[in-house]
Length: 281
Image (cartoon, rainbow, N blue to C red; front, side, top):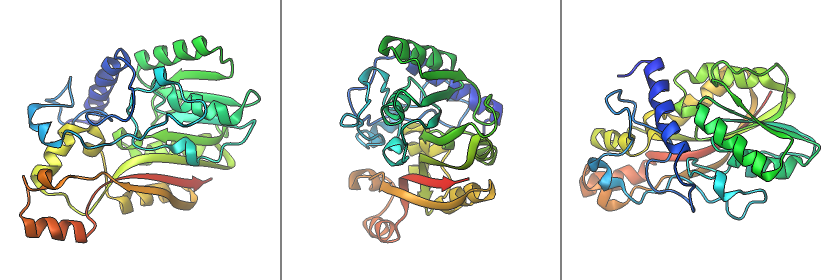
């Protein structure tokens, strides 16, 4: 198992590669969120074994949302946090793991010219690409900062709203990340974060291949544990705004489970889920 430092370097290397790729034309169906947790997979989150999982949809489409910029959409998310973030005109919004800037530009459409949007990412090439996108759009109130979510280079009580899209589960120290989120929020501020979580234990073989398929899964924890981390960071009024199962087709499950086990798996509500979580400071 890779160390925390090694995990960050693996993710940073992969996202540097993605930053130089072509933008998505819609929801991606493979390798969306990052890399495997295994240090032996440093350059790609896909492998021949993951052909079994091809076609599983992780991301959701932004194309009908105001402010959407296709050139900033690299298809790396698993939800639409800005849709639920209750952003008001004039708000200061911080996007954690901002990538090429897609959520920042959608947030800017909500906060308007009187607001301020700050994207934070720890990959230099992502920050560079996002800045180029903002410059091309002529946005003077959208900025991008290089920094680690566990130690944000941002002041206390800065943001009215924090958003993030399928990033927290890639962070090794989730408790620290949410404590930092709490710190940068103004009193009474709130966050809306989309992420990948688990419910119940996945079959071992399926867990392994799903991790290779999308790094989202390798860092995912149980939903109850995720909400507990948020609570322990000091947040209140914690609630789920959306929960969506990442559907695993029957032919995929048959590679790991008997028909009877598949039925039990479905009935017990086990699986991989995209959730959008809201909480207030």
